[in-house]
Image 1 (tube, helix red, strand yellow):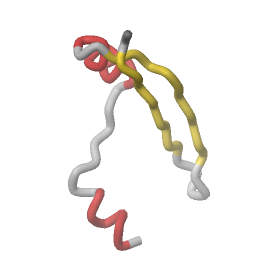
Image 2: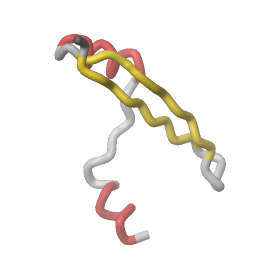
Image 3: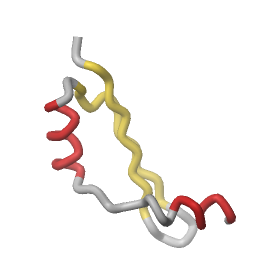
Length: 53
């Protein structure tokens, strides 16, 4: 739990479309996405980007 307390100061919600568009501008594309439901019912979304070749 201590780790989460440190992360809360730098954490922010990000719109998926805005994130993908920003990544595209820097030459990255979405390679994988994962959604996990936490025990408290909240969702955690993880996005993996890779450099366009």
